[in-house]
Amino acid sequence: MSFNIFIRAYPSCADQAIQLAKKLRESGATTFTAYWCPHCARQKELWGREAWEVLRNVECAPKGYKAQPGVCLSKGVDGYPTMILGNGKRISGEVSLSDLAKEVGYMGFKEDLEKNIPPTLGSSACK
Image (cartoon, rainbow, N blue to C red; front, side):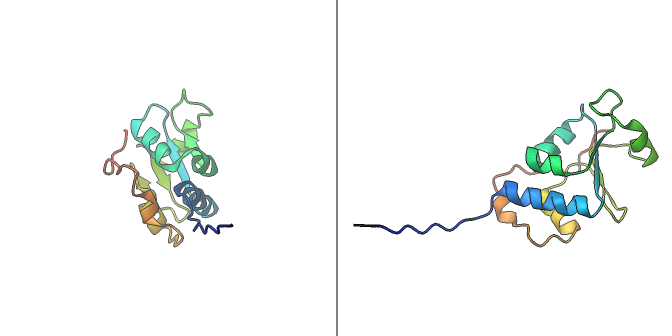
């Protein structure tokens, strides 16, 4: 006796976060953060480690790891997290991955995969 089991494979939320991160990086987007900022830590958590490592990130706090405060000053970044998209548009505070996907026109993002992720805390940012 044999059984055939068919399983439908679905992409994981980590996979789509990585694809979105690649899209943002290719478009020239940069994320500016500070190690002491709780909103930055939460944004990083929303992305997940693998996707976060794909993004272009700049640490703005002078005492942070690989700090580049001069870059942050030259870009006029005064709140964290801040993402500057390739077209120059700034997005400050915590942002859902779904909203970022819409912002850059990434059609491969499926909101229903993110349903178990807690909502962002509005547009909260550290100054």
